[in-house]
Length: 156
Image (cartoon, rainbow, N blue to C red):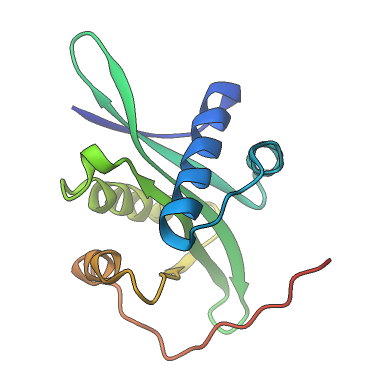
């Protein structure tokens, strides 16, 4: 049975950090500093006004295993007078992939958004251009590819 819940506590922070580091290695070949990522995870968990994490656990009669995690951050839209929920840091363990877990997490987010205190006007995420499997999953969930390009400048 799959149980989806909001992350909390140090145990979840460690798992989220492990998943973030694994995702960076798999998608971009990047080795992240575990302590920095863990501080970042704990930082968001301590500041709920910026977002939250979801954890999907596979439960059996005698065990629980975290199958997937994701992060949601908020972007205010003055055009729509509401929040976009940005879905980020999506990671599904390899043994649980292609089983509909992301779809269930996305459906859970949509249900959460219907009851959110501040109106949610939509969902956004970005995907690696080469990750066509993930892109197909997002399209299957009803998301459309945007016409925007993403730019960034990192602080030193």
